[in-house]
Length: 369
Ligand code: OSB
Ligand code: MG
Image 1 (cartoon, protein in one colour):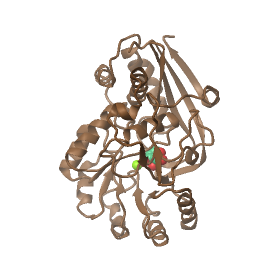
Image 2 (spheres, rainbow, N blue to C red):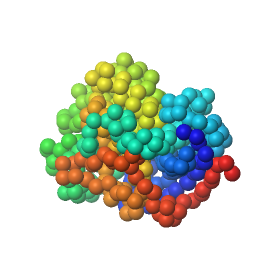
Image 3 (spheres, protein in one colour):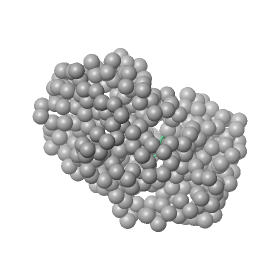
Image 4 (cartoon, protein in one colour):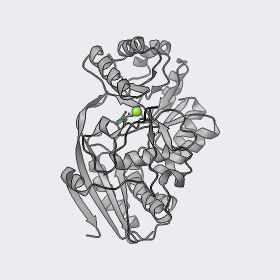
């Protein structure tokens, strides 16, 4: 694929409701959209970094530096075979997984279009629709939390993830569990605890949770392995796994029993697939996390989640759970069985609403310039 032109759009989209986690609350979401023109085709990708370094150290600002100054010069006007070739071209750039992943996504889109294959098929996916759930942010009160969970259940979601943080954990989960005894329920702390303070979470073992996601710091595989020994419930790592070798090390160490895969966090879909395979070989289930993506990133997540070892519902909700208006013409809807269809058109299988993209754009650059 001859990389003729690359455009970047820093966009900001209003969320339908504020989303609060242990690292802060947002009511708009920033990301960078990547457009690559090659041999008459246009591929799209999404850099899922947020405005603030709350979830990860990468931000739209760091990506706006690393893409033009390092990643784009590595590939512009070159012939890039595929995602693996791209990864070799940028291997000398340490870190910046989300920036790399956004470009890799656009290359997958191009490759799928060139071959007439939907991305799911190209990756070896085996499902036409994937099981999904909803990630529920911190709420003002337990009553408000019960109300919002009830609302999502009425829309058809059959798996709920609750965000927790110190002081807003066991009693919230207990309230939801009492009200919904059969709900598939899990929690996500986004690194808000230490090995010591996580002792308050031990009662969570009695609530039949699917998993406890990322209680400790991102660079703390070792303490996660100590904490996992104290729980029957599987720990699941999100932030800690930024490369396939971390997945291997985490499993060797017993730091988790389930892995959350987000293509952005791990440097691209190709890296996500490598993690999928490592876990599959050890019979460890994976599931697809989310970063409040636009329709572009959501299409990619659905394709990835169609691989066989994605055995738990993904954080991939319907478009209306996030945005009133998206930048794709296609919107994603929830089926009555709590699944979402994997796109079946070539590449990502989505098209861009250029007017919406322009309206959400804060900054735009094109290369060569
Ligand atoms: O930790 O999984 C997370 C959103 C932004 C950053 C981190 C996380 C999340 C979510 C939302 O939980 C998942 C979604 O996109 O629905
Ligand atoms: Mg998480």
